Image 1 (cartoon, rainbow, N blue to C red):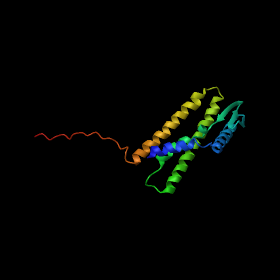
Image 2 (cartoon, helix red, strand yellow; image 1 turned 90 degrees about the vertical axis):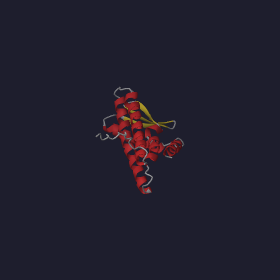
Image 3 (cartoon, one colour; image 1 turned 180 degrees about the horizontal axis):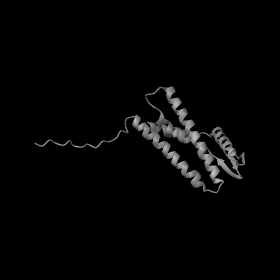
Length: 163
């Protein structure tokens, strides 16, 4: 059921533009990079959102928001026997935590990229590691809470008494 809910939420994700969240992520990244001493300028071109960092333009897509990751993980953080309000609070905390980590990841990637480090190392590798880490933790945690992820214990035969 959780996997079906995750798939449904991802389908919904692709139906939305996420412009408001892309603007928020771009603006937050711009603030961090400006504080680090970079020259930044945000601009739009043909519906795409860009941030220029030291004269290098970076496009902010819906993928930059981590909204898909949050929606994919949400059903696995939902606790079936908890109150609705507690679940909403938990998902809100998850979204804030993921966005905070994402802001650090993006800001660091943009900062290091302007220093000449290849994009695949500063963006793609950390992005993949974070996605898998968050999703694996979510799925394993849900399996454990649902009673499906218990440890398998080896059966050791008892020593027989010899007389």
